Image 1 (cartoon, helix red, strand yellow):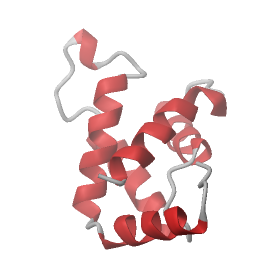
Image 2: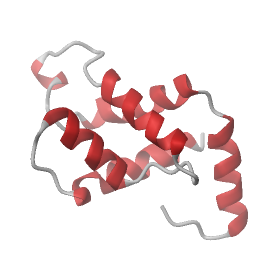
Image 3: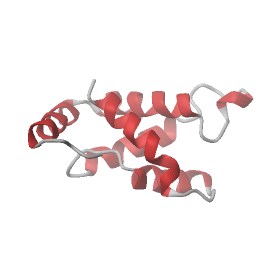
Image 4: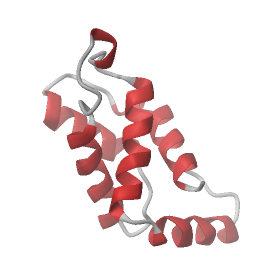
Length: 104
């Protein structure tokens, strides 16, 4: 994510920094469910299918200094969880959507 100004970056850090872990998990899970990268939900998997990986991603976001969900965080989490061949670029749009929703 690229911030157009220091003020916007500061605002993002304040907003996301104040969010509880559960709130960040909910945002991440909502985006992952919508995207359904693995196609599990479309096949009828339980609605909590992406909850575990959403927790992992939220924990990574909370540990980073800048509180930003990067494509690399998503790539690492999905590669570890699903042992699939992904590229970091596959997660660019998802990371942007997560960061935008975290600002709400």
